Amino acid sequence: MKKILLLLLPFVAAALITRAQTIHYGVKGGLGLSSKTSKVFPSFYGGGFANFKLNDHWSLQPEVLYSYNGQNQKFTILDPGEPLHTVTFKTREKYLSVPLMVQYHITSKLYVEAGPEVSMLLDAKQGSAGNWQHYTSYYHRFSLAGSAGVGYKLPFGLGVSARYMYGITKSIGAEYNSNLRVGIDYTFGKK
Image 1 (cartoon, rainbow, N blue to C red):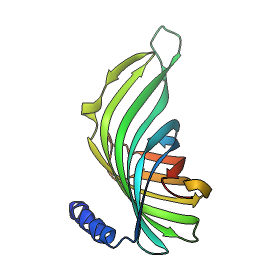
Image 2: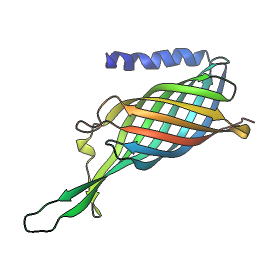
Image 3: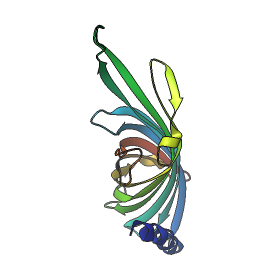
Image 4: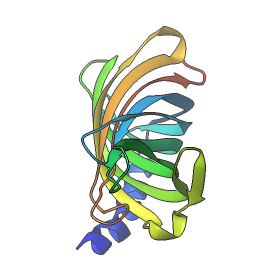
């Protein structure tokens, strides 16, 4: 079922885009909190978008984003005859993501959005005490997530947004990605 939906998605998007009244391009970026466990890790993202206005209330916004995520986990190690010591194990991941957001404009400035996000893992590394090892081959190369958020358009082409992304497919083992993103965007040619 997932494969059928993924195959149909580009065709539905193309049909909607051909009906677009106005197209605007822009850039966006911001900070995030990523998590695979209960602990969160500060992250960042950035990229570009194209916004296809379908009518006064609806628009479709495909994006291409680079994101840097991770997590820190602390473990207490017990060696017989040795004192207890704590080790911080770090994971860092780099993704290229393509969200396809459907936006509903409540007013001319305020909107809500939701849609799928396909991500490709570019690099993953894990380590502690400065010893890093690349673990990209242990991860699933592609992942699928669902995203939902809210945004507000400011004057001079600026905007602010908040979005939550939760993984539908696993990224490694039994773990799913999740990320809360807060950022700013700039739409070219807007006043």
